[in-house]
Image (tube, rainbow, N blue to C red; front, top):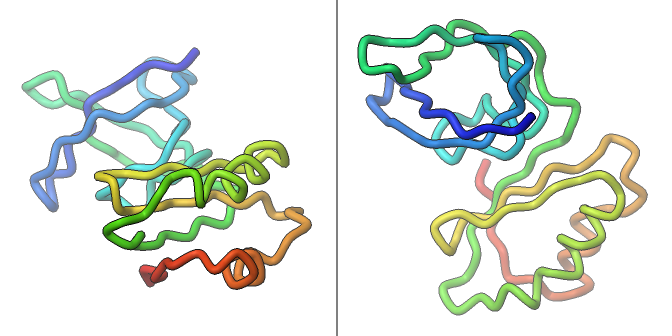
Length: 132
């Protein structure tokens, strides 16, 4: 069952609301990618505790995601339709993609994905800059 929870990162003092799959009362699996905490990508399982404000604070990561996650900056004038083919192909083959704040693209690539992402980006002349 997917639910939204508030995750508080005490190191960065950032609060995010994220979609997760609830595994137990305090164990979750990411259903998307957290924009601020790069450890929390789609498929990552983690344990939390509630703080005094009722927000979840990560105690530990239990299982890392099985996806290969890559992040990109999109051009200011990007058109989502230019990237939809790549996103749809990822989705059809078990991957995931999301755009945050209108300019940050995160893709989650299944380990057995048939296509070389770099070749696809070059072939379709997608104007992205990878965030390392």
